[in-house]
Length: 434
Image (cartoon, rainbow, N blue to C red; front, side):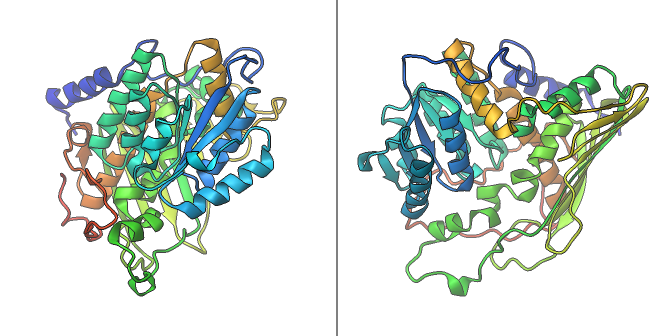
């Protein structure tokens, strides 16, 4: 396909818009010396927004990352996950969890109450549809942020995230993304060797996210009497595009991010995809399988297979084909077969990537050199949206089209009593690019 000068300009405009001072689209730097933040007389107060499993894990890791931190506030739309998380965190960190009842916030505005409660660091771990609004509020209030992936479920949301990331840079605030593989020690060494020419020029990448099924959407008959549309959808958030972004974005975004990392965060030119829904999902409107083919400059292709169906083959790996060799990265030690063979063997750190990202977040705050992952975390989310758009429409989607999309999925105002219709599941060939 020949790409117009207008398309190339669109790619440059997005890069310019998302670029932050201090380097373009680089992976986070490894801080020298001890990964743990230095002891400091100033206690950092942490607030957790979103008290599900991932939020509870993030809070646990944050409390382990620094010797002088305390969890002082928690927020969730619902009471029960907050209390469950609080009990678990108190058991694990009895001296660091000091969340009094007055700072246990519940409801649609709980995030703002937490931000206003005097915390220094905010952990954002709600369903991703809320991420842009929550990130903006935290940055506007001058808070350091850990921001789970993905960053938005629609393109306007990504642009909001870019603006917040730029503002965080201007304010000297740390912003660390939950794209955890970029903080994984073996993967950092692997991609460094790839960038240094370990397999020559990359010609193609095949990435997989083949997993078992997720909790299906319950039938409408199981909806409790009196429960409004918004609560029903939020309690089953993974099944709705506006809340989760679809499995391609909410889960396989890790594979997308690693593909972008391998290609030095250069945005793709276009994408085509196939996908659909194999297993019944009642009112839900997400696909359960997608296969995307991305095209990068110089005829480089990225292939991404994503599936979440029970009793099927599982794999979560990245296969890199280069002009002078091959590289593989999965849950096992990554390796390269090129002019020189290499396999990662050093396990001296003993730290997993989830812990490292929090260690480096707090160390950067203490050092006065805050990390800002804003550029690439936004772009990787945009690449995921590009693939979803291609799958949902059945059309070839260019980078220009996705970055200029005006389709807004997340309502501007939320109310427990609001009427919230569930859009039909996308149908390739019928659903239009918006």
